[in-house]
Image (cartoon, rainbow, N blue to C red; front, side, top):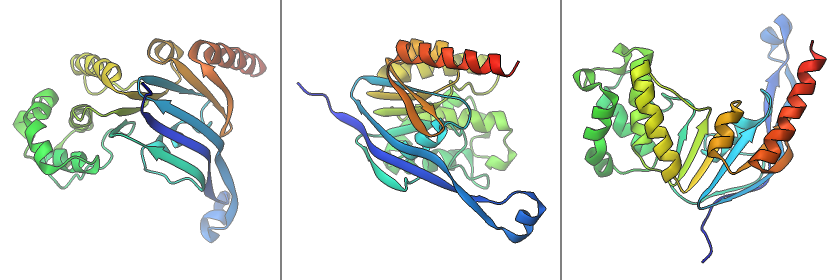
Length: 245
C-alpha cells in the first residue's frame, strides 16, 4: 500500500529584495542586487517520514520552513502540501494584542484551517494546558512575553496536525512549563504523519529525524540519511571552526 505524499517541492527558488547599506541607502532606498535565499530545492515527504534541515546561519533553513507553512511564496518552482499543517517557529505569529487570549485561540485555529466549532470544542483543553485560566479573557497586551508564548504553544500543539514544521526545539515559559511543553512536543512528533525540523542541535536532529538535507548558501549541499548528512556537516563545521582560529 502506497503512502500519501504530504510535501512535494520541485525546483523551488526564492530571492529577497535588498536595500543598499549605509546612510545613502537609508535615505535613497536604493535597491541592491537581490539575495538568492533558496535555489533549485527539491524534496518529498510521505506519511511517516521525518526530515531535518541543517546548515549554518543564513543557509535558508527558516526560509524553506516558511515556504512550506505558506508564509512565503517561491519565485519559481512548485510546492504541494497535502494535509493539515502546524508551524512552530514564531510563537505568537497571527496573534492580536488588542484581543483577548480566548479570541486569539479562535484566531490562530481559524488561520490554521480549523472551523470555529472545532476550536470551541478543544478550547477548554487549550486554556487548561496554558495555565492562563485567570487571564484568558484579558487583552493580550496585558500578557507578559512568557504568557503569550504559552498561549500560542498550547493552541498550536492542540491542533494535532498531519504535518509538523518546527524551527528549533522550542521551549516556552518557565522551567516547569518547559518540561510539560517538551513532553507534548515529543508526543506531537510521534503522532504527526510528517515532520520537518530545522535545527543547529545535531543531537536532537539525530534523535527525531530519519533523513536530512544540508543547506548551504540556499542550495542543497547534501541529502540522505540523517547520520550520513550530519557526519558530513559536522566535518565541514569543524574545518570552518579551524579556519577562524
